[in-house]
Length: 288
Image 1: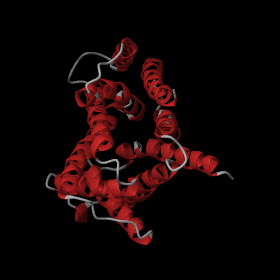
Image 2: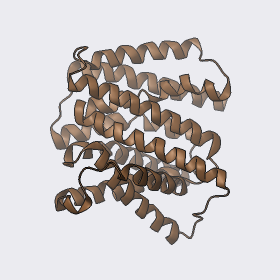
Image 3: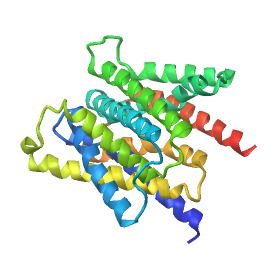
Image 4: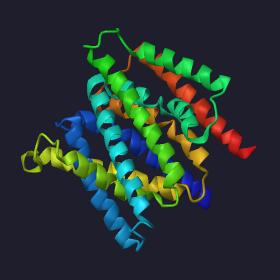
């Protein structure tokens, strides 16, 4: 098997596992913040053991990089809390679709870093996403769980897009596992103060699910994703990552019997299409 083909397999497995992460919002009987803290802590330990086993560097190059790692960890922590909260309120399919507004959000916040203005096509993508999100919301009542879940999902998308831009600009010199070790470590430590259910009070069932979420659905896909980038471009990885909501929705249907409505499928198609278009635009820009 060629290295590129193997990398594609790694990437698809990683994206499938990323999609499966959403299931734990419903499977674990804890709030979104508690899930994030315990999942991040377990993933951090697993990644640390991986780095030690592979004899890879753990220390960062400068004090400034530690400050950036602190900021990235805080950002990813907020992203994960809102990610799980959105799905707990709106359901897996709707929550994941709302989160996948991040490629379009990226287009609009990146100019603050590189000084470039969004193009007309980007504005059209934004209109498509807004229409898709509108179709996901049953009514404009802020007391409605689905509405709140969609808004929370979009907030999660904003923090994820922001984290990706900062990481690319200031932290891309480090490998995937090393980066994720610091982000999971910081996220778990910063949010631990707000935990409602102490670890000793977590049921054996939930502890087992947290271990699975932390090791198999967090540490493993991030490591596979980083390994795939050795032979695949970041743009290719971005395009294939757009399959994540499809994987997540299918797994939720299969395991949790969540059946998305016709409007959800229509709105989701619009949002994912815009995400695919924006990612493809970046791909074409880099290959021209």
